[in-house]
Image (cartoon, rainbow over all chains, first blue to last red; front, side, top):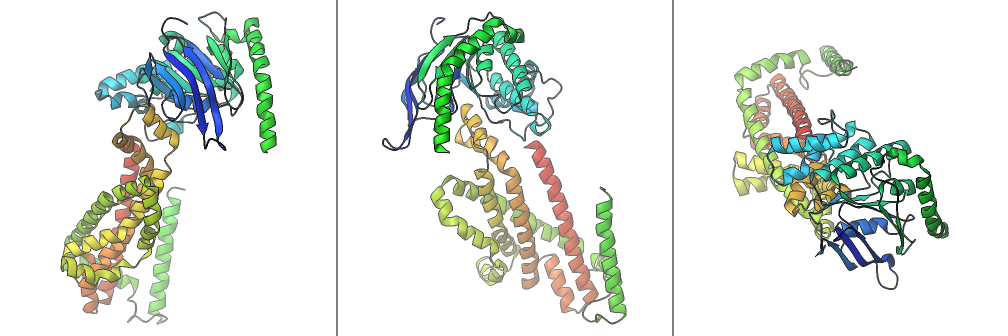
Length: 266
Length: 248
């Protein structure tokens, strides 16, 4: 770990429902994210990844353990954490520029100044020229880039993303992955990405937290030794393939358990 | 296509008017029941100049505007209140829905006793008749706000008031506007109806007076004027809605 942790998740357990009939979504999860580090959390469907995302983001309470940002315990949404959601989350009534400027508007920044700032983040996600468009006029990938720009405009210390490319096609996912990589390297942004994509996790991360199937426990933490700065050329390197294979050997058993559980329930 | 559809609508109306004219001219319909459309059109100009229609139109419009503001000022907060309490919603939503369907214009004597024979009675009755759709559609619109938009607001540390103003209200605006259009339709019917019944105010009173004078062509012309005025009113509403959608 590089010095003091930017984010710590310590012995977090979350149950839904009563003690006898309820479900343990996450059990005794612990890991840290260092300043400037890119960490991914990966696990099979239904392992509690999104529950963990909502706990870290302060949107879900009533859990055991603790989450801290630079040693400050999280009790609700925290200004240091910026969240990007899995679902499409742009405000449909606002233009691209007004969506991105939204966090700055909340801070009371004068309109001219906040639009100037927002333009910078619009450019960062590659949407220059689309400032006056509304989300309905954009593709799914572009809308997700607006969401990322809006979150970055709030200048959070930690960028927390929940499968932001899940609803996109493979080509767009790869392109957006590269875009996120560029942004993260440019801003040295501390990032925690929740994902179920092995290639996405390896392409982007310094370390990967692997979760077990329900209840979601820490299986192990896999370091990624690919050199930085990375480009999308990393996708074709032998090291990349080896890391994906190593990760899959860990995940296969958990994914099979998940599949068996789904078949049993079905 | 953009011109063709309205042109077809107008042509159909002209054809219906022509058929009516022919039916009256050949005594299929008695001219003592319905005057020929040509006489009604001729009477339009007469009632506008002789019966002070612009002033009456402004009076009815003013009453409508006041009722509309009351409907919004009360309906949206009540809708918000019901949205935030499941118990209150279960308790009152069926009553509000029943309220929307009730023929409230029949309660006008009660309003006359409470508020006197004045524009206030007309405005209050118009508001009461039009408020239910705004409440119901506000509840519906707020409930339909996508959770992820609320989560975005929460993650940006919005207060409850900011969350309503910046996220929930704009998200619910199309639904609230649908309620407002419905509510104002009910409101206009009741306002003109009460003006007619208590013989006070604008366009409703004009219809009453012309009917009392057995001015059949004038009466129908006044009714046509109310229809045209409401069409104009709702066209304006549509533009306001589009403008609000763009600027919310």
